[in-house]
Amino acid sequence: MRASLNLRAGLVSLLILLVFGLAWHIAVSGTGPQQTLDPEYARLLGQTAVQGKSAMPGPVDVLAKIWSHAKDPFYDKGPNDKGIGIQLAYSIGRVLIGYSLAIMVALPLGFLIGMSPLMSKALDPFIQLMKPVSPLAWMPLALYTIKDSSISAVFVIFICSLWPMLINTAFGVASVRKEWVNVARTLEVGTFRRAFTVILPAAAPTIVTGMRISIGIAWLVIVAAEMLVGGTGIGYFVWNEWNNLSITNVITSILVIGLVGMLLDQALARVGRAVSFPE
Image 1 (cartoon, one colour):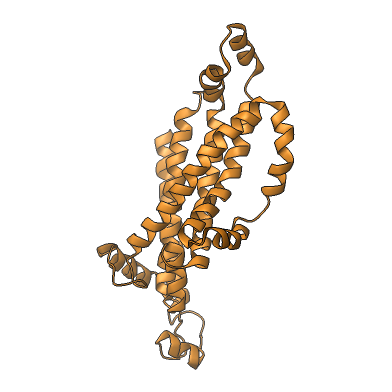
Image 2 (cartoon, rainbow, N blue to C red; image 1 turned 90 degrees about the horizontal axis):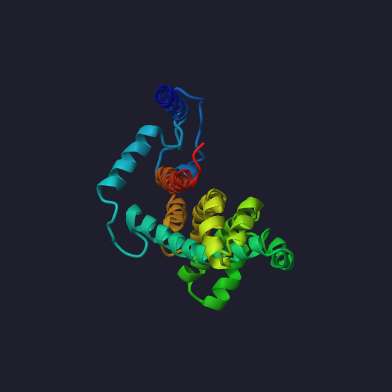
């Protein structure tokens, strides 16, 4: 039954993709609405300002560009001409470093808040104050103090990854059934052992949910951060291609960003299913 549902869902997804691709092709082809490009804009795009021809690339153009990137993703021809594979590697590296640092802070602090009502009330005003601040608002301060654009981007990833993990960890720990904790206390299980053997397994699904939210936010923020700091990364690649008026590369980058984000999310989703209690 489940296999049949997955097959039908896959077929529907494929049908939606085909319909979208066909609509996209029609919209940018001469059969779509008549369109006259501004002569100066057409000159910048390297196209002729003709009626009935859209400046927007079609799905065939994008697929051809994806194939050209896939054939040589790691070329390096200078500071402003690197393959999309190199740019992705920089971005993923920054995300993983900032995200790992956030895990090292959020999980222990979340356990402390979840297990101690005193610390929960004491730290709550600070969390509520800092949580709504946009991660990119930290970028000027990070650049001023750290004076390194790459490390500043890692710091921004750390900040944006911290709060979902911290809050979900604290909530998961505080929500563990009191009966289990009381039994552990009755058996004179120490605090640290109780945290690892009783509370952590029970709170693990909620903690992983917070980690899954954080990785999505981190991947979203790194693109914007790299647009600001420049240099390397998939965000810089998108902005550089826009400056070069290569709309095909911009669309290709968007698809690649979405694909990598989906893979990161699915990896943590698998972890979440592994740590969940069986129904």
